[in-house]
Length: 257
Image 1 (cartoon, rainbow, N blue to C red):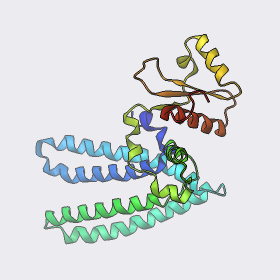
Image 2 (cartoon, rainbow, N blue to C red; image 1 turned 90 degrees about the vertical axis):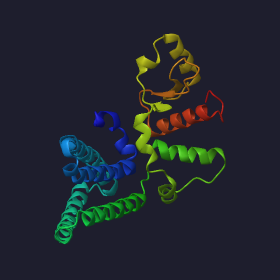
Image 3 (cartoon, rainbow, N blue to C red; image 1 turned 60 degrees about the vertical axis):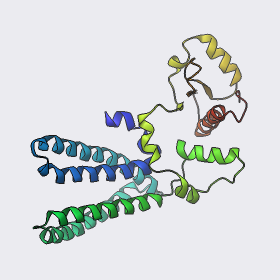
Image 4 (tube, one colour; image 1 turned 90 degrees about the horizontal axis):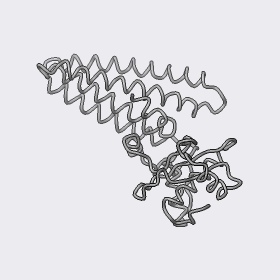
């Protein structure tokens, strides 16, 4: 269920889901420590902890593949993967040594164990957030596109890749899967055009384009838009269609093209 709902988000919001993987893993570890204290609810807490770590595995695996492609600039994915695995193994060994030391130091004091866990978890999340911010991804997700569009409309200078990595939201895209998007790209043709007359009308408006933008439904209160991509649509056509959809949504530009 998790992969079917959020699967398409992992590539476009790789930073957010990389951070989510670490967050949900920390939640799972927290519940693992809490389970022995849960009494009759031990099995429920332990099961939730396992689910959290399973979600971490899905999100971490998906984002790892996306980030490997980002770093493999010379088509050297295997080399990047080998170095990443070596680094991960080295860090894991250091963690085992330090963890063994802390475990022996805090054996007789559960308060110290919880204190160290919370301190290290906070350090872990702060470090991961800063690390994710350092990623400079030179592609346009919907979130980055909207930031550039908003700046373009008010005549502000467009952001470079480095500047975008600083200002783009990291936590907000995690919520996108829980509500219906106001702009849907790549909609099913038959669902959008049950009647041929509407298709002919919009095709005349978008003559020469490889996309069509229309309202999701006939309900006046429904402001959602849908983008239908036609055969042969390129990356430029997809960008143009999204720009057109944002223009319609904001009502800054004419509603045709």
